Each structure stands twice: as structure tokens, then as C-alpha cells.
Image (cartoon, rainbow, N blue to C red; front, side, top):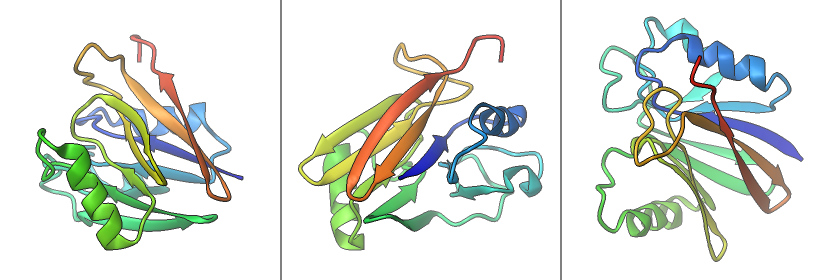
Length: 158
């Protein structure tokens, strides 16, 4: 079983990367779904990162694939998916890339959705939540082909 900690959209709040690691020190993987707006790239050390639409100065890939146990994750920020038929666009990317788990940010709203053998995960935003959500990140557990997701709320004081 592997523990994967996923965060997104801290928008220049550099302390969030270390805060998340301090809260989840025993993760097997740390993923950042973009819009870190990190002051310098070294702040992202230890994270598998993708470029968000506000990460202009950071040299990061637009997407990443990661094999964990018996599932393959597709990671992207999500700015090119639009807001209508978003799940259909995500499923299309999973199928074309031979992946089972879609991890993205951008909307600033937490999401965990299972559709047949596909999973869609958005950790929400660690700094600027939307849609009535709270500041959050997520802990994803992968055991063979089983995927589970628990959202962790970040206190207002952070």
C-alpha cells in the first residue's frame, strides 16, 4: 500500500509545501498539481509537479504520468479542460494515456469521483478555496488496484 499526498493552488504561499510535508511526513509520494507560484523552484523539491496557468516563471512539465502499484496516474493542472463536460475531457485523457487515475487542480474545489474503473481527484486549494470549500489537500491510498481518497482541511491560521 502506498500513501500519496496531493496539493494544488497555493498561489505563492510558499510555506504550504513544507506545511503539507510536516503534516504527512510518511508519504511515499508528494504531488503538486500546479499554480504553486513558488518563489524559486527548489521549494518544490520532493514533489512531482506540473505547471499551472500561473506558474509562468517555473520550468515544469504540463503533465506527468506515474505508476503506483497496479494503477497509473495522469497528473495535470487542468486549465485546458474547461468547466462544461469536464469529466468527459478527463476520461478522454485517461483513455488516451492508458491511465486509471486523473489528478488535477485549477478549480480550487475538492473532488473525488469514481466512474467504473476510473478515478478523478482534485485536492482543492491550500490557500484560495472556492465553491464553499475549505483550504485542503488530499491523501490518496493505493493498494494494488484499489484507490481511496481522504481530504484534509487546513486550519484558517495556516
